[in-house]
Length: 511
Image (cartoon, one colour):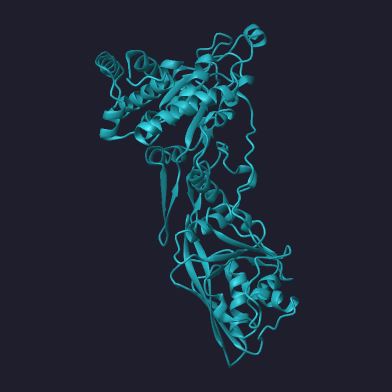
């Protein structure tokens, strides 16, 4: 048969669209043409496939006119993931393997010149797409990628180490594919790796009771947090321990988070079911922070999906990068549009930002005098726009601790103790409304976070005196709902609202 069809996938954002690799052999001047909106690395597959077939002892039809089409033609294709399906298509078209037996299988993998298979990015995203296929589809992937894909429940994933391991399964006279044939060809069991919770402990932080309390509230309700204080007061130390307070991830959350990391080539088994903390440097661009490029790639906010985005030296980030955070902070998603492509990535992260109160860092400090003029302080704080600050639920001052308090203070509560309280409050919110408190909107907010009469009057008075926007008032109410959950209270009372109000102070009031 001179025509063969092999199935694979193309990645565009988190979507893994089906791609049919069509291979046709014809008489004529020997050539190898590859079409179908293929990127440079895909076109280089011609040389990799030729060498891999020859070095594996297989026949490359060098006397034929070879045409490879990656359909659909208007879907961009990149990376070396099409090496294996192209090689199998050539073998099927030349009669070296049974073309009809390739039905119901999908393939992805980069070939070395010797025929060994190398991992490809986005294996988890590809496996998630296969889960919706009916009838079920089996997929062959290289080592490293197959283990990722097998994390998806119900996925039928086979690992192959060499091109010959795959060829043996589809020989014309061969028996049906074996599920376990040594280390070369193996069906992977859908077993998730062991979960190991490691990380810095909140018990290391001495003092800072107000900041510790704010971390607990933020973790329980999914709220954003801004830490303001002089250098060395413990802002970064607190932020690095925040992920250890978050409630456990569900399998679906873990799969989505791992799929994004896999898409960026950053997934490791140690990350499974772990809340990650992304900490980009303040010199990063808006594209690095929110995503972009061609084809669109996820940025730091998406890599922090279901985890923590820690932005130290908050005002030093580019204004365009900070303003790009406004939409994902509200919606939990980021849409990247380019002239020819559009991709949407999830970005439900918890923002933890840290900053000094002024350029020298000591405004309001009792330890050292501030050298900055009022204009310098105003200009420094003015780098953060009002709409962005309005979207951060908790603004917390982290003061400098005197040396005697730091050295003599006992260890604080451990992360495990705080995490238990956070998990209980989080479970209450999920049982009541199905979402964390931070995600409450509209009528659902009115029903689930309705304060009692005295608390409502208190909130109205505070909002009027502080000039809050409607968003600021609603966010204070969400924080109050979380505080009530931590206290196991069904009703939002005056004490809960009063504590929430102190976290909505304007930044300049904290210095």
